[in-house]
Amino acid sequence: MKIKKAVFPVAGLGTRFLPATKASPKEMMPLVDKPLIQYVVEEAIDAGIEEVIMITGRGKNAIEDHFDISFELEHALKGKNNNKMLEEVQRISNLVDFWYIRQKEPLGLGHAILRTKDLIGNEPFAVLLGDDIIHSEVPTIKQLMNIHEKYNASVIAVEKVDKKDISGYGVIEPKKLDDRVYQIMDMVEKPSPQDAPSDLAIIGRYILTPEIFTALEKTVPDKSGEIQLTYGLRHLLKQQVVYAYQFEGKRYDAGNKLGFLKATVEFALRRPDLGDKFREYLKGLEL
Ligand code: UTP
Image (cartoon, rainbow, N blue to C red; front, side, top):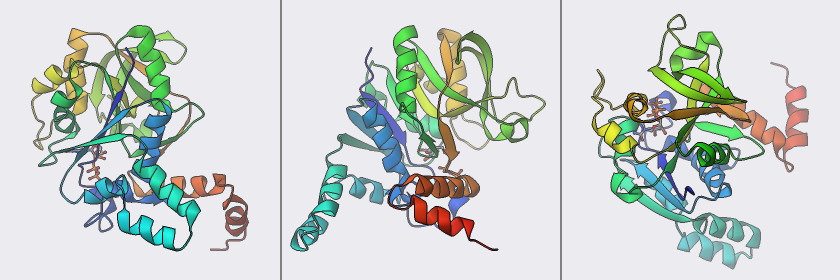
């Protein structure tokens, strides 16, 4: 079944970026000149997504404004004959249809996704997290859609991660089926390196079947009161086969400071208008 809807949970507190995220959303932090959230929305649109559903929370209004028409700004740019920028800001507001749902309290990623149950209905859908920015030839979510088309089931993006870093991720117990394709036998949230069932970590791209909603409804909140998506997926596993796909592309963990810095440098180096000058600057750095 063709995937038309994509969910973007953006209601998290972004505590790892405080104080920057005290009054402005983490998702609006830019890599060079484009907010993180726009990279992931464009990835979804490039993959053929027609409807974007954002799960927002308090203090996240800038995201809605970013994808909306900005009458004053457009008027000012017209007055200055700045047609290039005018086209760019108009392009952003014309990207696709946007829907917004509030998650009143940040009670976990699973809880956030459960908010979209009525809007999604009975069809498979995509989930993209703005923390993971992926540079790839084929949009990563499109790579998952291709696997979904073949197996008609939920598909989760995974990446090989160093054992020393594994405790920051959900980790799968895999059964290899094909090149880059695994059946998920089980999964564990943030295991210690010695308890991790593999080095394949779950990354923020998912295609989910609508049965995930009943699975999430059955999921008990963890110690901190959050409903974890990983635990919901474990319920889903009991009901139907779930696949993992080791995507092709370079991922940046823009949800932590070092990852965000690496992404900023590499995206700037890839930019035709900045790359050469920036490379020259970096080479000459003496610190
Ligand atoms: P994170 O675990 O990265 O949390 O959530 P966070 O709040 O964004 O960042 P830190 O850890 O406090 O620095 C993963 C994704 O799930 C969303 C976040 O917005 C992020 O995209 N999320 C998380 C929600 O939408 N609601 C929640 O209750 C929790």
